[in-house]
Amino acid sequence: MADLLEPGSLAPDFEGTNQDGAPVRLRDLRGRPVVLYFYPQDDTLGCTREACAFRDDTEALADPDRQITAAFRAVAIHGLAKRVTYVIGPDGRILAAYRRLDPKSHSKEALRVLSGVRKR
Image 1 (cartoon, one colour):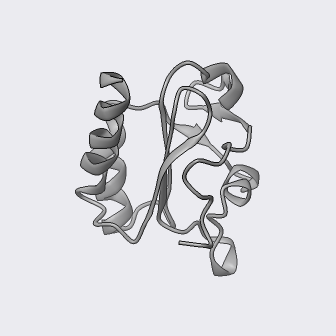
Image 2 (cartoon, one colour):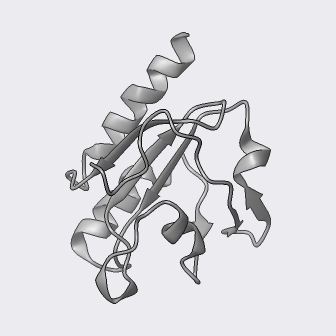
């Protein structure tokens, strides 16, 4: 997992735009846990399953120029995103980093980590 940001390290700050066009900054989310996931391509079976698994409980964030993707070491060849998920704690530190997970079920793993944060 050396190519991903390591658990315990501070997550890089970013600014993006949500589905409503409003700015979203990681620093503004401090005090709350965050799940940040990247996927290779829209309208493919695996990516659609992954997005649907997260869809109802998350806010979408656009990254058209791939700056956030690059900051989180999630850029693959040809500029596509790798399938990577980070769980970021309320203090901005990375709690877990995942790659190559089942697109249908890895949201459950992220939620498991989040439930541990809420119990602390």
